Image 1 (tube, rainbow, N blue to C red):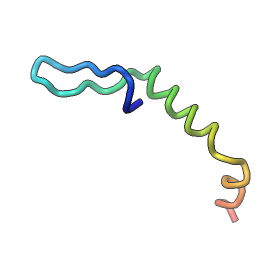
Image 2: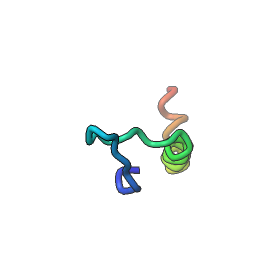
Image 3: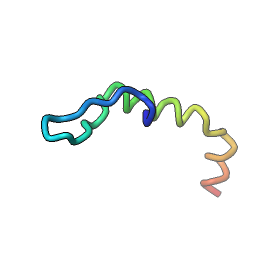
Image 4: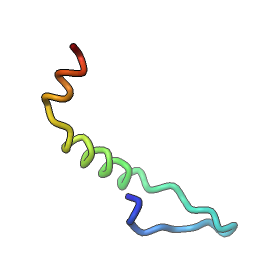
Length: 43
């Protein structure tokens, strides 16, 4: 997400990522979390 394409507003501020891109980022991040880590966090 940090290395992807960036767009800017007329005033030069960086735009927020699209909802699709944000969801892809979250799915990718969660897929890297091990099941064991989640289970241990509830103990």
